Image 1: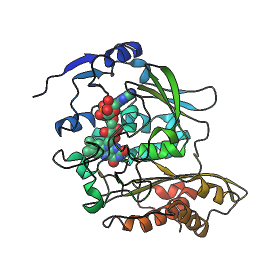
Image 2: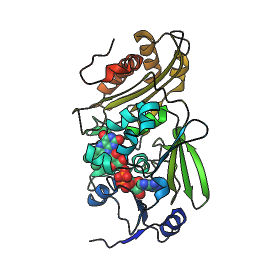
Image 3: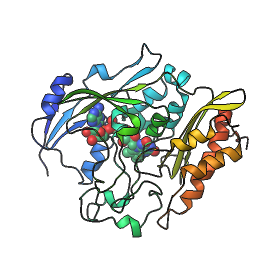
Image 4: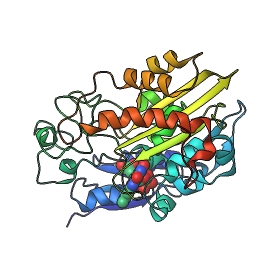
Length: 339
Ligand SMILES: Cc1cc2nc3c(=O)[nH]c(=O)nc-3n(C[C@H](O)[C@H](O)[C@H](O)COP(=O)(O)OP(=O)(O)OC[C@H]3O[C@@H](n4cnc5c(N)ncnc54)[C@H](O)[C@@H]3O)c2cc1C
């Protein structure tokens, strides 16, 4: 049994002070990932800082620039059903509700969702080598079971994917992560928050040691008229994405004025290729153009055997989701996309 200290933080400075005590400190929010990792013997916190008492992090507020500020401790459920999110950022609501289960979403927080670990089988098996868990031990997934693994952005050292649904939508919305830490406050654009594995796959993101996520800023543009989140998985609920796509479109005179396409389940971070979005500007939103954009997005994609199917699946998902975004009503259960 591992002994650990448990402390409740009263406010931000108290949390930052407490987490700086000792080397094996960890914040805990909803606990839906951290406790699992602990039970699997993958993390060993000695100093647990409960941040659930930080009231300032528990609200969703409109901002002066027409955007929204999501508190880090608002639960995934409360975020998905918040009236402003439903009205202005339905893409985010849909992505959150595609993830986990109702019970988990009721506990899981927005900050914790950004920091959840990969679901690579080898990472979760403490008896197996894994460069992400223990740098230098190897990556058995490359020649092992890799159905759920990366097809783009991977490295020699790691082919794990980042499993979040919420973050795929946040990347499409160009959210900003607000943090506070030993060096003070700073803002991290969403595309810079998560990292590719390179030769440091044990570092998932650019949050510095002992930094606290305080909130997430959403810009004014929510793509509320033309959006879609498509999640393809082995079971229709309670399963992580094999491939997911978040698409937000602004149309003008029948042509694409602005578009965001971000994929989940295929890389170590939400996968966005701006070259494909640029290609679509001033073009008609149709199957041929979405397929051409999909070819750009998946350029250089490579599977490892079990996951080869993801390349074609991802292309088709981009096209299907683009067409569904033209008619968000098509996303209701039972409705057919207008392909
Ligand atoms: C069975 C199961 C199925 C799931 N399915 C899906 C799915 O389909 N899609 C999906 O997207 N997710 C899924 N999840 C993941 C779930 O969304 C995450 O576990 C959850 O969002 C994590 O939030 P939490 O508040 O519980 O984080 P915790 O477990 O409390 O913390 C996770 C990590 O974040 C750190 N942390 C938490 N908050 C902060 C903060 N404010 N600042 C700094 N560090 C912080 C903790 O120290 C810890 O390292 C699933 C989880 C489970 C258990």
